[in-house]
Length: 264
Ligand SMILES: [Zn+2]
Ligand SMILES: [Zn+2]
Image (tube, rainbow, N blue to C red):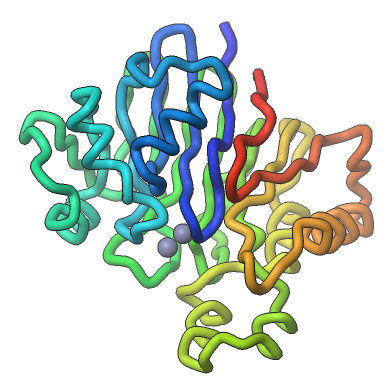
């Protein structure tokens, strides 16, 4: 039995990823209004009532805006590490105590037929994580909102069959752009977001033939263009000998519409 994946939305205006197996349907982050997430699910023919839970990466509102609403509306458990929950709980409204499923970063746990592993990333939030999600021999890794990618992270995301990876900005566009300097420093810093170049280098560092789909995610509206992100990453991959047409599918995610639905 296979696993299906769709990025419902990705970017600083809201992030929400959807994963489905025969037994379970989960969201990773819910950083849009409940209504928009429901509409996005319906647009890929998924009834929002059939969702079983939400995994949270970190407390920034572009990742958690709809978490409380969806948990109340559909009685959904929220899987979140303790520090992140402490940082977000006040903005969630009332959530049923039994629906708060806290873990410690690095823990492995299961949700139905999914094996979930969280790993530490480097971002200006209380305890931000990426996720590896395993179903039988298939592995999906999600890595956005990190200022740099260390060896530990590379080890975790190796051998993924699908990798959703941040390709946030072009550093030159950040430097010459209209953002105030403190915000520029944050984006370019070690605890901000990774650039198109770093995304390309990360892919070439972790690439194996297991990797079938790579999705570029969390693109900045202000400091990037989808075409530029795609070209920068694909050039770096091609230079290191990866055949984008033959070896792997390199695709985009979108700020305001779902990606394709991938079956692995
Ligand atoms: Zn974000
Ligand atoms: Zn963030």
